[in-house]
Length: 172
Length: 93
Image (tube, rainbow over all chains, first blue to last red; front, side, top):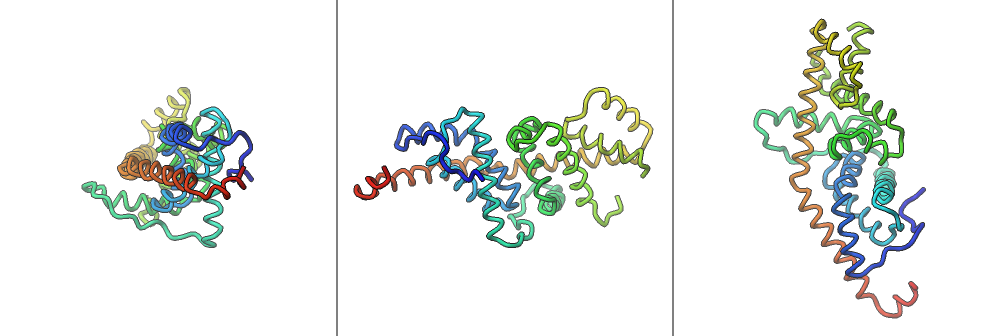
């Protein structure tokens, strides 16, 4: 399992190395955060995990191009979240984040967050990545190292199950 | 809902996520024109699509703050590296 061990050249620590790494951080942070959120379902846990992922990346990142780095750092994030979920032993209930004040959509948004938390992780992850990362199935396929057809199939299943969860008990 | 409609609901989910090809889009449009239940399903998925967009916008509100906290953590990490005793640093080489 690739958990961030150094397979290639180690990034140079120090001001210059860190400054270069900050550029990578700014390019890839949102996607790493989306992966962590998709797996952990809680914004605060996701932020902690994304930060830990990026810190590991600073010390251990292999000497890869931008695209290679993206796939690698996403893998590091996924492995880190898997470790965190194992430590939790059982999944937490869906996150209780502060309610957002979005006019009449407040309840609908709350229902959506609850439904997202109940989606299986293998569907929640690509769905969140889709909305965080330019609504592109191709990006998801690349980041998760699956075929384009698989990414599309998971998105479809995620949308259908999400709708079922959103309308559960309403008969719609 | 017929099995026929269930197949179209797969196409509806694909259409909402923008992964449906042109030929199937036309086929879906024809079905939607004739089936009120599937039209309702399509509208519901479109509404949920908007909500998903709003949810991400809400989470995104603090994304700059999160990135800044991370950058600060990176600086702190670097500072700790340079503050380690010389002897310890030699053992890392």
